[in-house]
Length: 128
Image (cartoon, rainbow, N blue to C red; front, side):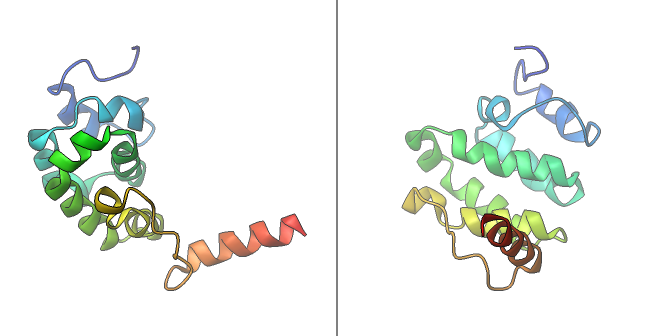
């Protein structure tokens, strides 16, 4: 697993690495536990946008059982995402709201997300 997480101890250095660090959400999901979620919560607001998005997408890679076990930590990070300065982090946080409970994404995102509205409109125009 070149470029991946070898152990949970790699988490801190990966989160502090540059914006274009070569790690994926799938790789991150392999080290998610209560301790790693606590570290992510503490650092979340200071992370690069790409790292925040990778963290959020890593939740989608978790087996259901593990997602339920980590539900509170996941919910706290999603809450932070929903309040983030970056609109795409907020959109992703809103999409993941209640993901663990419902096992589905919230796709009612057009209201209140200008960047999402513009992107969706561009997709609609291209499909015509």
